[in-house]
Image 1: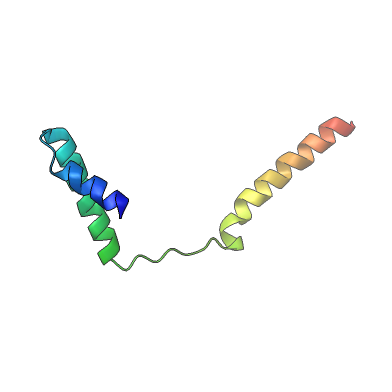
Image 2: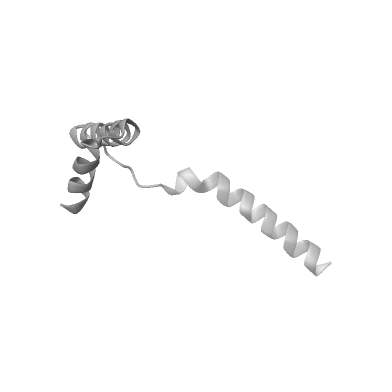
Amino acid sequence: MKQKDHIQKNMESNDPFIKGMYTDLHNRIQDYQESDSIVEKMKFSDAKGSIVIVGIIAAFLAYVLVS
């Protein structure tokens, strides 16, 4: 895997900033892969409020344009 080689190479860097940054990245990737992360899809009920607000704004703009 090309990305893993790049991360591993930078984890062995002589620059302490680069080494720390990529070591932290590697640890975060490992933690994410080990946890049971489940991403839920967005439901219609999650977007109802935004859809209502957009509808109100669209109706107002249509009213302004017509009158």
